[in-house]
Length: 149
Image: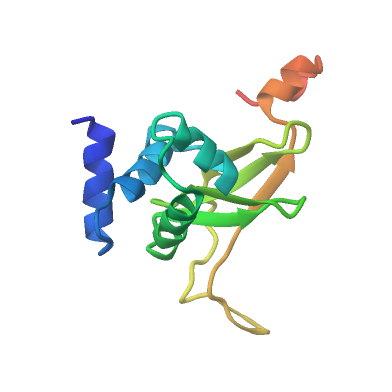
């Protein structure tokens, strides 16, 4: 069995989810490419490449179950589109303002809930987004001096 499939089974079991072919397929997709951030429709399209019989409702349910179990995170991009990504370790996001691609970046040393409080109340979660041009867009625009290495 593919090591990513084995990892998917183990993670589903650890989070108390019943291991189904549908849940494995969704989680495997993200484990195979950990930096992916996809819409539900994109997840469905990729899964249909290998399992065309899987229904839209089933894929959406698997996404929701895995989000609730803390395996996937869900964010809304600046255009109001919901994206899903792997959520196995704390990370921030960099969003390219030209191509729209999302990148996972190491989390900063910010305080973490539940110990984090602000004057307005108790913080439940913290999300950090960085916006700019990704290296690929910088290179294609001839802005090599702006690229990060």
